[in-house]
Length: 204
Image: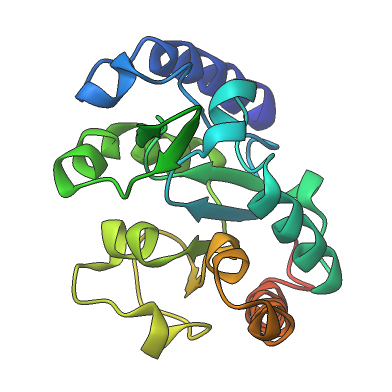
């Protein structure tokens, strides 16, 4: 009954978010990209915002960064289909450049405007572990002084969930020098593996 009720409430919330106009980003985006995964779920991964591929597909983490994240999750011993994936901002913020749409970092007002939707996702998904991917996502809920570069992979005291961890966003690995990508990927896998261990063997 808990799962059925939570899922029904999630579907209603996703429908409401589809018509969101709480900030100007909706005007140029193709669609609201809400979270995806089981409801409730033991683990929630939270990124910054949808990218170009996600905006067109209407689903989170389906572009190159999502493909890398999928591989890292598997290498870390997890399974994407058992996790809930979302972003702190639900619309794609970009700058047109010829035929391309170049990612732009959301500002604080845009992050705050989307806070309502993430609050509802956290309530309905009720994860035991939340993993923030990237500085924008982490600072949205852990404070603007939080530094992923210094605190990545370390459990953080928070009332968001029993366990909260932050690490880099997979897109940062793809943007980095090619010679550093293997090391960056290995570090992300290590962070995810350590995070997943926090809920292993305890009903997750």
